[in-house]
Length: 304
Image (tube, rainbow, N blue to C red; front, top):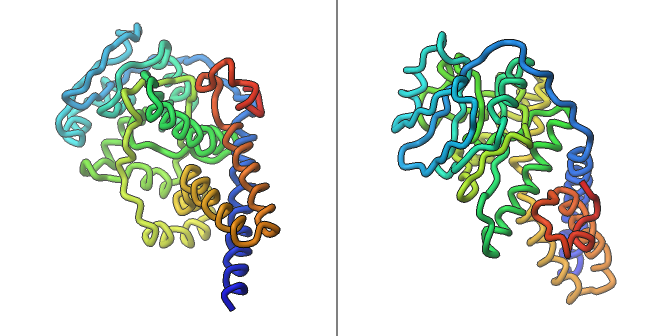
């Protein structure tokens, strides 16, 4: 009886894990597709860069005439106070943002000029010294390449952090009601495309904290209506939020593989193959800058 139950659980876990692995492997491969850059901006734009108070932001970007740096205490109040005649879009930085990459403003304006209203910027930990920060950076880059680069390369919207984003001011003023407003959900429900610019980098002291609560029941309530509306972007996002994170899945599969190896080593072979598949998938999603030169050949399966 116990043996039957264990093997039923084993087969069920195997089925769902294989489905997730194939899904993530496709996203990892897609993240290596050649990206078509936006054409040069044809019109003049101006943006407001909003920074929380008590932020150690150091401004090193040069296009001073195209933006204003504004610190805020109350985000909705500050956004509503901005003049739409003066600013076209807003860049919302997290409280851990430290600096911006050169030409970030130009790249954002190029995307905005092409009709993109919302852009997720690339958040990178600036100081990666120490094991904890390095692992955190690797984990976040896997998420970036799977659920942001991979998504956009396949035609889906990028996942949104809720910070370090460029967004159309008019839309933001109409939709940001409180500091707890879930901008990501509103954008997906309205089927507004979210792009991701991997070369528009925001350097951070640590990774921004995802500001929205994950409510599985509420997410599932949106799945059927989004299917009826053929809002595939929202469907894709709901599925990705329901699934475990790459790090949690890998940890769970490692534990189950060890348990099955001890229980029935003949049945554990398939799980070792799954672990290999996950390792290859994750290695595809790790960018070169996080891999030390001496270990690059060992750790990278695909050279970006």
